[in-house]
Length: 298
Image (cartoon, rainbow, N blue to C red):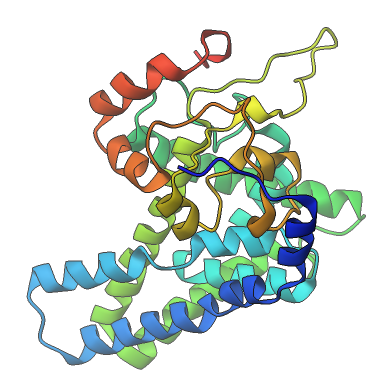
């Protein structure tokens, strides 16, 4: 594990190096290249069922949803566009709206679809989070349109565009590659967003913000996200494992995120924790004892 934080001059140096940005940008051609390659293979090669399933899983787990998350927090329109483009093959473009305008406001509260409740299994969470986030994204979009005095049927309704883009993607796949490729695209996308939801599951599992005397929730603090300083997870997930600092300042770039001693620490890295979450009794046995009793979501 590596718990050291960058010194101010080191952080400034890393922020000036465009390499860290290009590592994100290059995910776009890589992801779409792999998707197209997968479409070509399944539409032109006689595959056994296990081979077909294997390709679906292999492509699904590299669909770039974590990079999309990072780019979705950037300040420039071009970077946010790339983030949304990475979400398209996973049919999760609405994540940009719900995550930025919903999750970061409601994280570690019962109102947040992406915060797993204490003793909730990851399999239950996949359904509740997926459905509630999609509904929440429409509600947020409607509120944003109302605040800007735009009609629900306005061209500024991004949720409409997301639906159109994702449907066009599937139609294009069918017309160019056929039925087998369409099935591949659908299930690879499902694998992609399930992977994202599994990350969501372990990030805030069982944690709860207290309410103040006014009835409002306390601000998000370092203790409201599970962190991990295991090196492999940090590298693979672009420092997402230092999640508390990300919530403290969401626009902070991944390469300069800090470790906070106050944050609850996972005993293993995020990749290992995601595997453990697939076995609920094992997950509960390890993690429940680590959840502060005052923060348990009933």
